Image 1 (cartoon, rainbow, N blue to C red):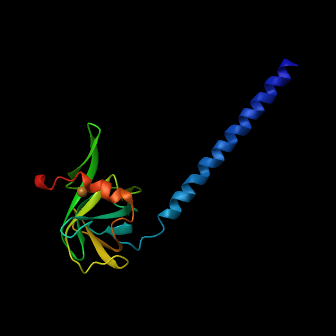
Image 2 (cartoon, rainbow, N blue to C red; image 1 turned 180 degrees about the horizontal axis):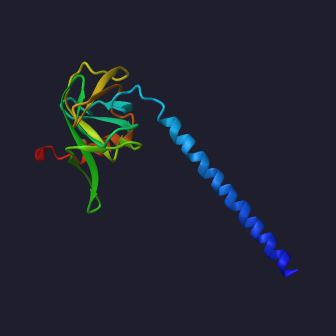
Image 3 (cartoon, rainbow, N blue to C red; image 1 turned 180 degrees about the vertical axis):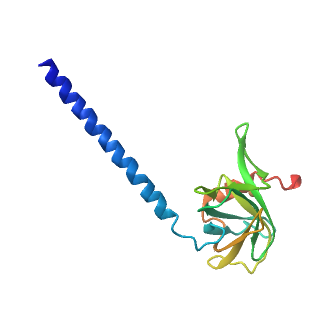
Length: 179
Ligand SMILES: [Cu+2]
């Protein structure tokens, strides 16, 4: 009786490992298909770009977007430009002693297979001297410059402040005198 039980268990173990192997074999096929889009020369794309207008004239606005690098060597986002905006700064919101504050970021690293999100409460681009030609509901263009000189442009939706509570909270702690 004991021998029969053991045989049954080892057969079960064999069938389990066989399942594991077939799952491994399927993985490279899925990875290969994501490489099949060499059209975008730098391999970097900007999606979901959005501009949030200043809460009041003279105050900064903010830009959020997602950066994805399909292939190529690691790079850095060195600068962001938004059509209709005088000056920009890349910032990151960090927690310090339990208080949320922002600090300037000189370069944001990107690498193949990774997605970097600029979003409320994290990385974002501050927009200074926002022209009143930028109107909620319309679209402008955002251009990122990489440290190798490549540029990527994408359309950016313009939203009024108040589209989300997070925007005003994100910037309430901004100490302009330190900039
Ligand atoms: Cu900021």
